[in-house]
Image 1 (cartoon, rainbow, N blue to C red):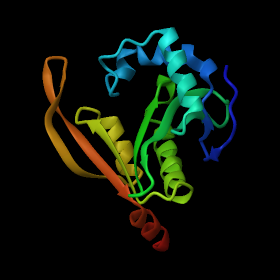
Image 2: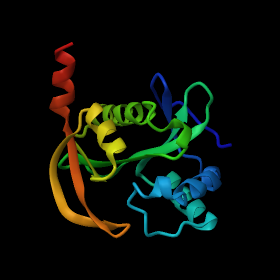
Image 3: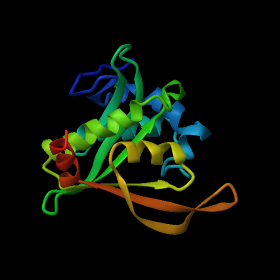
Length: 185
């Protein structure tokens, strides 16, 4: 089990700097079809050595990547991050996955996304956070909408998976959307 630090704290989970020693767990998740079919890595072969190298590079880079950890058990349940940071235009791309299937559809992903969005706006001074997902990934779309993301475009039939074509959805949230919603409370 990796070492985790409560960098960004929610009610159900917290975000911690990633621990490269968790490479076996990540390798297991990223080779599970139920998990990887919803990620942009479906055509990648993830070995233990490759995943260890990826996690070590992430831990050393300026990218903002976090482990998602269950608050009550300190179990690693997934990963999220803000990538392609553009400080001039104040834009960034969000990515997330819950790898531990016991935590799917229980609100952990939504809370992690909200924590990450707040971090992007408050600490990184971003103005626009975007993400993309596949049209068949209903669970993720619901999560992103709960966190305040809105669809702004689609790339039609851009994903070929299991002998079918699907759209890639592009979603975003703006700083003003989040802070205007706080004013209404």
